[in-house]
Length: 496
Ligand code: BES
Ligand code: MN
Ligand code: ZN
Image (tube, rainbow, N blue to C red; front, side):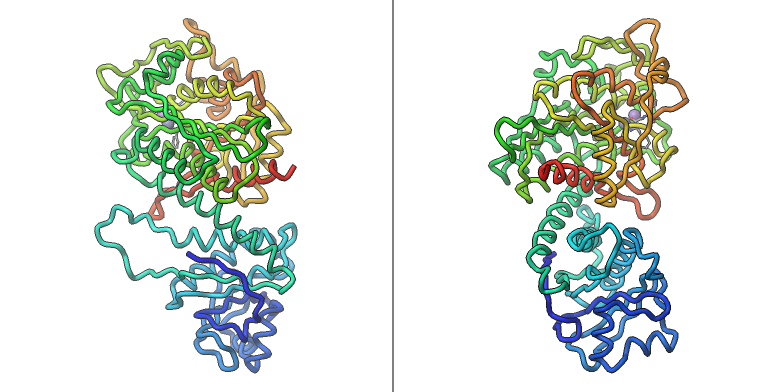
């Protein structure tokens, strides 16, 4: 996929397809109006004849429009001009990409980024265009012996903008490409099955990333190392697995030498069967996605490297499987975490918090400016927020607001949930310092309460991505979220 910028006008640009926005009530965008004039009113005629009325979701393609140099023109319905907000823009872009990819064009010039959108400056609109186009070319066919050749996504997209914007748009394009490549990595890893994407596979993937940059150093700790550090909670999860657990550290030094790092901790359960508290069989395959937190950390670091972002970031990935076995943890087992706190494992399926808590204690050694953990942690979060927003819980309201803002501007939203003292009660255990589950009520919050007991020394936020990290149904697949949110957060930190 190649992205470029052009200030050539839509009627004179040579391309497989020119993409133009049309609003309801026959309102043409300014690029569309220019095109219409050059072609003797072809667009107005299409609207007048009722082939489209500009409402959202409509697309019309016209071949070889006389008076223009393109092979095709694609008109994209944008809805009412007065309602054209960030969501409508994203929708129009997404519809345009679907339509152009379904056409025979192999390249296109899109003028959609010229459309005015409230609280979305040009550069952000360009980024959306790049990210959506890039993502639409992804197909999870790495393991298909025969690839589907019928769908041929475009290979080149040029972004049409005013001559004065060219330089800044170039930067936006490269940011968009960087983020999109991070999202793609997260999707690719998420879609890989548990028999391929093991903890060792994730470790190798991290090492590969390290080879691509002299600013990134990667190290991988074995179970023996974890034992020495007293990570009894993490190790209790990997007991039942024949694949050894790995604790992966990626240190990206893009910022000033003495600047404290942002630490990203990603849950890397490469398959979650539930362990002895085994899950029901239906849709259990989806638990290969239980490493999407880890994948988002790798994806975000990939984006940082590509952008040469001037920040210090440490990625920490506790990676393990959760399987039943004669040697697996049993309900009622009591384990000692690296922090010294003891945990009664009442349900071996609440394993994410058991591996995260030791990783969260461990990352204290980096004297972090902030720690963000990202985890497909609770089914309860899917029930609460569905697939539209990640659950956000934090011991620092300012950090939480920063993340909410980043999510909004990156179209990768989170929603703030409370972490009140009252909920901590639910984690009481008669035999240990705490239980690893808090009962049926407020499952996302009690999971975060559990983690909060290991993060008191620094500013911390938790993103529960169980709902946003992948889609079910016939479009089943990883989404690459929340790479955009995290990268935006780091971009904003780098700028402040
Ligand atoms: N990986 C799951 C959470 C999950 C469930 C993510 C469904 C996406 C979809 C996690 O390890 C888990 O099993 N959580 C349990 C916790 C419970 C035992 C307290 C859950 O949510 O059921
Ligand atoms: Mn589980
Ligand atoms: Zn899990």
